[in-house]
Amino acid sequence: MNRTQLTEHPRILVVFPHPDDEAFAAAGTLAKYIELGAEVTYACLTLGEMGRNMGIPPFASRATLPEFRKEELLASCNAIGIQDLRMLGFHDKMIEFEDQALLDHTLLSLLQELAPSLVITFYPGYSVHPDHDATGAAVIRSVLRLPAEERPVVHCVAFSSNHEQMIGLPDVHVDVTAVLEKKMASIRAHRSQYLAAELVGSQELTAQDIQLRYGQEAFWTYPLKDITLET
Image (tube, rainbow, N blue to C red; front, side):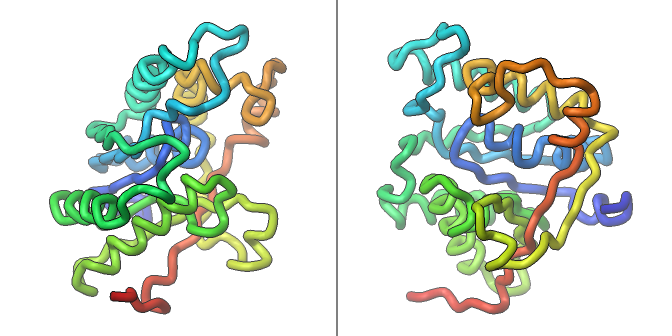
């Protein structure tokens, strides 16, 4: 993605369910947009309060984890430069079971308030975690409730094992090499999480390791014109 393409979106809404989703999925892209003057709102649906990682070595407990994750989320947003963080207060690991009307109304209200030209979220059905898929589905439903001429572009993150076979190759590739320091600061801000083996792990990463693992971000443009909202 070149500079001209990045400046096409001065107002961006990001919707993910958990603290740290923004760091691993889109921190570099968001940092680049922000450096070019974009206003970014991050709507984080939960505080990840049911996460199993408590730090390595553990420093949080089930009782204290929500507050730690809130602090980590704030630090991550500061590292990226996100100007507007909305913590929406839904329940971790329960997004698919939330009151759908309430969830959709909350997101639709944000879309109407902010009028973003770009929304970034998870690709429903191709994002591994039920909260990820349910969040992406709610975003798509809410966008489709807008008049067609007011709908933003929706860029989705996908990483399930079969996603490229089912939805094709990414539509958008972003080289985030120039902002890798910000991206890694965002990731490391989530200190109760990032050392887990399924994330960064406890090994020391070389500059080459970091570039190979985190230097590119990819997104799929959701085909809004191909679907009709059920009423």
